[in-house]
Image 1 (spheres, rainbow, N blue to C red):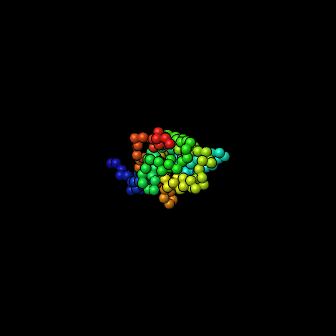
Image 2: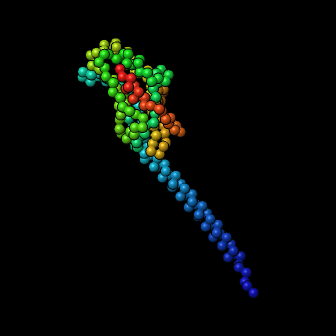
Image 3: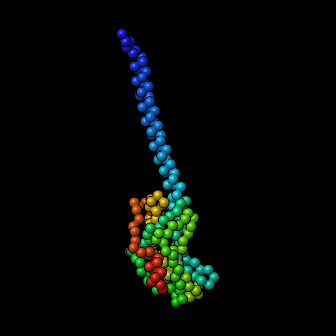
Length: 197
């Protein structure tokens, strides 16, 4: 006649099985949490941060106004689109600025769409320059006022395809997350450059 297992043994096996299940679930959670933390660290290690700065300078015999785009982040920024607004209205025609520039002014621009801006790199997207004595103080002030009525937004993504729009307009201008960047048919600064002065 076979002996029945003792109640103590049944309880021990049951407790052992439950303990193994609990340990397995805990190990699974720890693995998931570590993977989540590692993904967050990877994204943070290549986080771009675009800053848009307009400038007005007078350097010796030359004066200029323009726009610089800088990546102040720790990873590359892939520029997808650029948009201009004047007095809160979308615009691609910079005639209000060029009309105030003196004869003999020059235009310099850089292609931005598809450009990869490395961490710490600055790109001078567009600049106008002219002989410093070609404008009176009143004309220079009028040009400066017109220049500040323009705003720029740049949509860019990280290498992990997380995207942001950096803006110069509004209170607290900066960058905000977006699901994706629009894909334009043309490069805005290239189009402005083609128009010339």
